[in-house]
Amino acid sequence: MTFLSSFLNSIPGAVSQGIIWGIMGIGVYITFRIMDVADLTVDGSFATGGAVCVMLIRAGVSPWIAIVCALAAGALAGLITALLHTKCSIPAILSGILTQLSLYSINLRIMGGRANQPVSVDKFHLLVSQRYVRDLSLNNPLPLVILMSAAVIMTLYWFFGTERGCAIRATGDNPNMAKAQGINVKNNIIIGLMISNALVALSGALLAQYQGASDINMGRGAIVIGLAAVIIGEVFFGKIFRNFALKLFAVSIGAVVYYLVLQVTLQLGLNTNDLKLISAMIVAVFLAVPYWKKLATRKKGVKNA
View 1 (cartoon, rainbow, N blue to C red):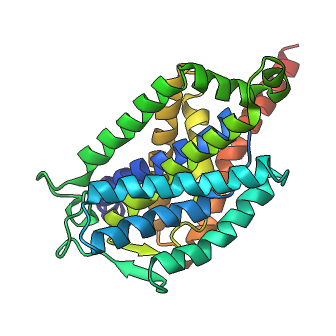
View 2: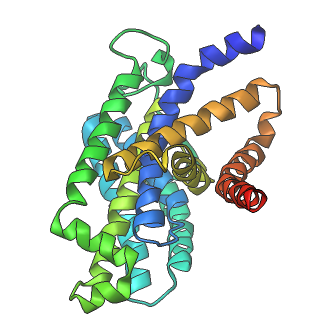
């Protein structure tokens, strides 16, 4: 009974964090699924979004303006990775690693040389805060993060339906064919990476406000959570959600499911020092599920034959 009550109490926080991380998962989905690019900038641009947002709020800037600036900073990080890849012919995965490595030092400079910068809800106006996660008042962060996630999904649904958006999708599907059709593949890669990392930075900015601090290591392992959101969403809703907007929604739900599973494992009394190990195991299991399904279907087909 204690386990059940503890888990139920943790659900609002898990859902709120899941939706926030879901925005980052959508950014990963753009590069991983739409563009077929392995972008590891995520771990750095996530922390960049948090650092820019927190430092601007501490300087007295409106949290809305701080979020817009975090978006711009994330887009700039994506631009650097894209330029390294398209203009210097460096493989995408190495370009992301180089940018991620550089962002560690840049993020430290943004945060004034400190590895952690707090932003207390008592001293500053924040859009979201975990203090009110179980509160039924207007301060509850859940409605706002749901609205922001919905706004992101609808904006992307509109954009990828435009001529430019379709060109980006064509670039990811078959770059050689896209080039033969007169599409500027390199420009589309640049735009796609900028959009992806802008969303990742937005997620980092919201999470920094939610947890009341920006940390230099807050993006470490972010790519794992992003991939978990994508894979879990596809495993549960891949055959149901065919519409593009619903696919993005499935990624957001995937992040929520990931955090709920994580809460269950933590409520079982596992050591919090093993959190990264648990995260990796959860992702590995969900990555293996599609293969296990195919294997089971194949065996069933052989038996029926």
